[in-house]
Image (tube, rainbow, N blue to C red; front, top):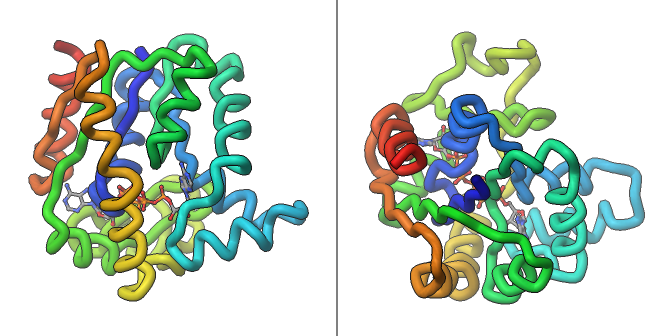
Length: 211
Ligand code: AP5
């Protein structure tokens, strides 16, 4: 099964992607994590990508699309993959079609904007793996440290009020049109109430994938 997780920044895509990967054995591809890795690398692209990340705007399609299509062609995607953060605009959605990459299920994590601010301000992230926690709703076993590696967690630099505002406006202008794009396609499109607790959202997602 090839699956897309759509939703506002902070809706819980990364959190749920981890469960889906574990339960269903899908390759978990987060373009946000890919871009953060590029920004930390010594490549020529690093500084350029970092500027987009820190301003909350989308990395241009000519940088991200080819990288994503190559990633999907790797062996671990043969039995199915999960896209978290891609596509982010109509051109990226069409790029998947043009590359003959078929999608079976789109899960739309729906949530109100008011919830997002508290989720992102309380988020703590393990940068190397992309695992994300919340200081109240999904805390690590030991405060400030990743459950698996024991390494320190960070507060993402784009999780500050000014950049969150920008990311939300980018979402409304560029990403939200993808909802209609996928609703009109011959695939399963399921809306999940992402305002519920992590466990309840996970259960709804499990049911949607298994049905
Ligand atoms: P990306 O990393 O994809 O960020 P995003 O879409 O803004 O999504 P987030 O990671 O912020 O949120 P999430 O939905 O994964 O929520 P999470 O599970 O962490 O992208 C970052 C940047 O990269 C972009 O701005 C852009 O520049 C670039 N980029 C990425 N993809 C791109 C593309 N395709 N094209 C161009 N540019 C691209 O949860 C949030 C918090 O809430 C956590 O603390 C979590 O613990 C908590 N939480 C989760 N679920 C619940 C719940 N049910 N109840 C309570 N708390 C919860």
